[in-house]
Image 1 (spheres, one colour):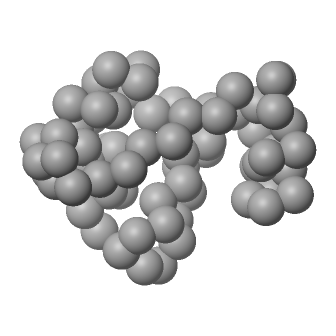
Image 2: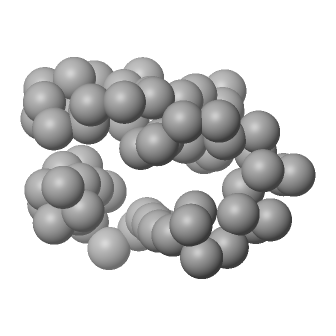
Image 3: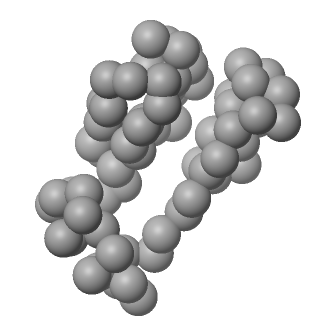
Length: 70
């Protein structure tokens, strides 16, 4: 899933993107306090605004691509 996400990001933004993957089971404090993540997987797009989230299935490339560019 992460490999596919990186492919989508590279296709859309070249090398001008930042992807942070946080293992919520190892570091729950990083996401529970700051981002209010209550389910996994959660994909959060911060920039460009507005902040948007996909919760659940992120395996559909068309859905994720539309999410990232909108």
